[in-house]
Image (tube, rainbow, N blue to C red; front, side, top):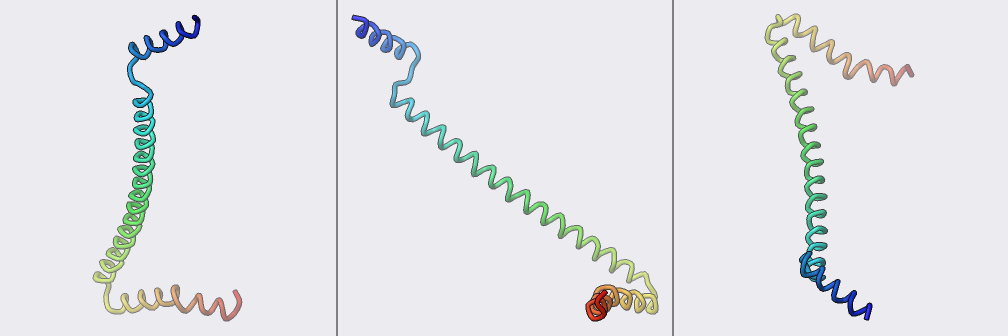
Length: 103
């Protein structure tokens, strides 16, 4: 008799509360799908942040190049020659000399 009463109570609760077992399974599937979509969205956010960082670096480099070109436009021919020689020294000749002489 207790078993029948428990079954009746379970049925009564199901009627009051709502979804059946199939609905529970659908809710689980919906939850799993929502979690997958959320993971995918987070991955996309990470990718977009990476692209923004890369674009920020490129913009900084472009601004540096623009500043350098602007400075060179305002230089006399002799100043421009000295500037380019200095740049060549620091980027090409000095590193090679250090490697040759072991410093």
